[in-house]
Amino acid sequence: MARFDRFTEEALYGPNGFYTRGNNARPDSGDFVTSPETSNLFGGCIAVYLDRIWQAMQRPNPFVVVEAGSGRGTLCRDIFLSEPECKAALRYALVERSTHERETAFTNVVSTCFAEVDELPITALKDLPAGPLTGVVLGNELLDNLPPRVLQRTAAGWSELYVIDGRPDWQTAPQEAQNMASTLAPGAPPGTCIPLQLKAAVWVRRALNLLDRGRILLFDYGLKNTADFVDRPIGEWLRTYRQHRRAGDPYTDAGSRDITCDVAFDQLPGSPQIFLQRDWLLSQELETMTEWAREKWYESAQAPDTSAMAARVVLDEASALTDPQGLGAFLVAEWHVGD
Ligand SMILES: C[S@@+](CC[C@H](N)C(=O)[O-])C[C@H]1O[C@@H](n2cnc3c(N)ncnc32)[C@H](O)[C@@H]1O
Image 1 (spheres, rainbow, N blue to C red):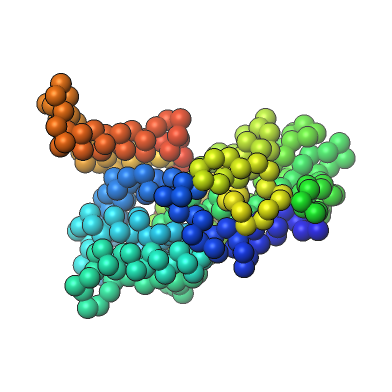
Image 2: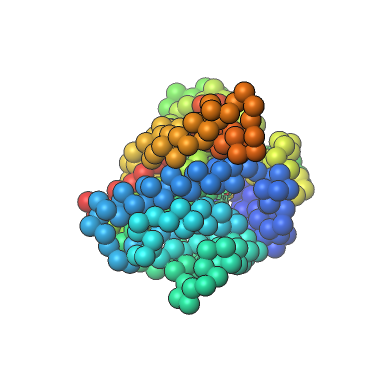
């Protein structure tokens, strides 16, 4: 018998875990398509953001960027290829728990961006580095992969989800977890399930302690308030994926699929500002970046040649990143540290 968060921890990151095995979690295998894997425009917008923060902070050198849950390193690659103004001061740490992903990412970024460079401005780490640092901590779709505890409202209080022999089992929750759940979702009717995202909260606290000055910027799917989970069935916000398709309940075949949970942003410490991904990308010059493609496409839409078709692809990618029913509805949380 295992508490759900411990079961999921093993299923994702244990010796045969979904992410440990690495080669399962490839975008080209279709397991997930994240914003960086959708378009290099995402990295372009983050490069614009990094320049703005660097300028606002009086151009610190070094300017450290820590990217947590960096996967195959696509975002890092696209940031460097965007040639931000802060590039000479930039020291970039890819932080990735999966050894397979981390090593692949490092090799990919070095061979694409730094083949001719003697002193590499990037490192690859298994966990957050030691602080204090001046710069930015970034993460795309990290928090949803930090396993939650799951509580269900009963007539008498709250019960907690365990997994026994491939089946879900609900047991009376410890009192402190019950208190937390009651505070986060007061008045929830019996049958309501909510996530308790303690691992995500602890991770954000560590990131906040890492910086002496700078920002934390995290992108993920989820809801602003835990109370908003109340009307949603558990299978809607606690999901599994294999090859880009929903893959049934999470309780069997540990390691065979991704297990992911919508993030309840109100459970994260430090009162971040929250934006919609769509608005945030548009505020970082996404439209300016795609202006050439719009012009090219309108010019040649009647008889498109290959360059017009390439422009169309860029416009489609920008639409996907800002789609109000898809990636555009993701939330962006930003914390300011030291100013
Ligand atoms: C859904 S993937 C996102 C990958 C990439 N950021 C992207 O957007 O394509 C989540 C990644 O976070 C990694 N991860 C999970 N927990 C982590 C932790 N505590 N520190 C660093 N990486 C972690 C996983 O191994 C996985 O590669």
